[in-house]
Image 1 (cartoon, protein in one colour):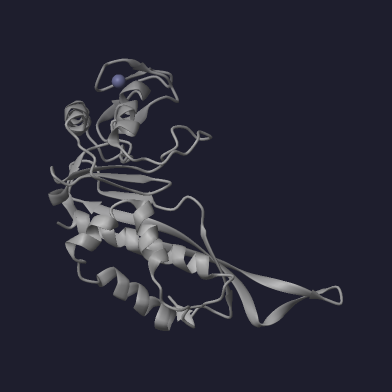
Image 2 (spheres, rainbow, N blue to C red; image 1 turned 135 degrees about the vertical axis):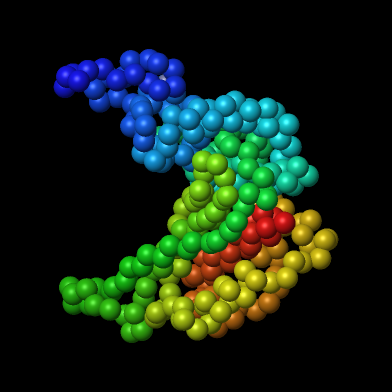
Length: 273
Ligand SMILES: [Zn+2]
């Protein structure tokens, strides 16, 4: 074999240029065939030509599953999880924007993403659903005599991204990680968050609450009505919520934090059925 021998696609036989396509464990895959694979698939190296062929067949079948799909619930503002509860299936995409700089749209029906052929997955293929909350923080300082100095107690801006992590027993998708919020939840806090005490305990408590009664569940199906439930709560502002020191300045952010926790719990309860 010479250095410049052309490779051929193990699926369609097309010639693959020197830098084109993907290497499989026992062959090669051209770009055009790769485009038809699942948006959640990336493990070319340990895949065989046979398993890729099976996936491509399944992806064709998937179009029929999508045609029969009836949306009953949707979650997420960045990525999206679209659910058909009656059929016990869901589909998900990691980014609701169609292109890199495309406009991000709120997904409310499977029809909006059907052209991407998102894999329809059965609830019984879900082995675990987890929430991943990514925290970043930055100290806000004040200027005194031209110097940047800390407040006492320190003012810390906490920022949060929420991800639903869905683990699967599926022929070619081991896991889906879906970013739920588009903009980071920002919570300006006086002092460190009491994350090891009240905060985490409350978050865990909220995620493990028993299923609400039917009337209540009815109202929190859509993202907007979830927000309503939180805003309708007439309780007075507590000293701490999720471990944040509550103030008028951060109450909105704290409610948004709770909103994404509730959203995750809804996803959890739905997919664990
Ligand atoms: Zn090919």
